Each structure stands twice: as C-alpha cells, then as structure tokens.
Length: 157
Image 1 (spheres, rainbow, N blue to C red):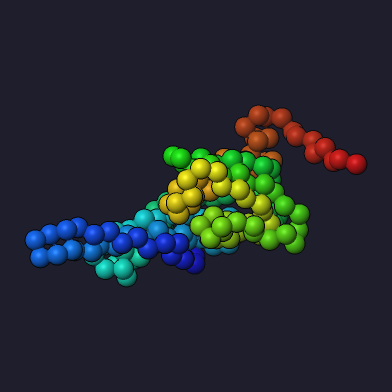
Image 2 (image 1 turned 180 degrees about the vertical axis):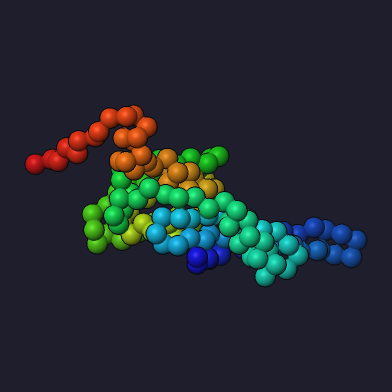
C-alpha cells in the first residue's frame, strides 16, 4: 500500500497569548490495483496529523470494480455541494483530473479516465465525491450475480 497527502489544513484558535495552530491532513492510500481508502487526521503537529490520516484511511479501504485500465461506464459521484463526472477513456488518454481527484483515481488503479467537477472544488469534497462515484461502479460479474441472468456484451459496429 502506498499513501499520499492530498492537502494539509491549518486551523487557528485565538487564545489569550495569541494564536494556537492545529493541523489536519487529508490522505489517500491504495495499491494501484482496485483498492483505495481516504483518511482525515487532526493533530497539533503535521506529522502526527498525517499519521492519524493514514491510520483512518486503512480503516476505510474499498475495493473498486475496474475494467482493464479504465472504469466500466460513466458515473457521477456526489458529496455535499460537489458533483464529479467520471467518464471512461480510451487507452493512452491518461488521468485527466485535478490533483485531488487524480490522487484517488491513480491509487485505485485507474489509468485512463476523464473527469469534470461541478459545484464546490474544495479538496475534501472532491476526494469524497470521487470515492463515492467509484463505489457506485459494478463489474459485469457482480451485476450478473445480482440479477441472476447472463449479460451479453453488445459491440458497436
């Protein structure tokens, strides 16, 4: 499992002697093969916040249904005031996304995808919306087992 810090947030509390700062870290972990997790840690020092974020992300690991290098179909993720459209792309396109969404998609193992964020573009909202979108995906085998019928793949000419 690899991890990356998406964003460090600095908060301040005004006390009698001045300002007291605390930090929060938004962390994404994954294996680049369909497993990804997002964590949020808060502490008085940055390294402790990152450590707590990684610990939180390990508790929330999710398995994502991928189709080779991309996602199986177009999907939209939502979180609060943020919506993100995830569109499958042809091989060689790469991950066309902002830094927050890119972290989640790359750690999930998606190599070709197009994205568009609507509404709030805060890092926390975009990361959670992207994860919610990925969690909506179902593989062909999963859909077949849920429906109890075989699905024929229709190829366009």
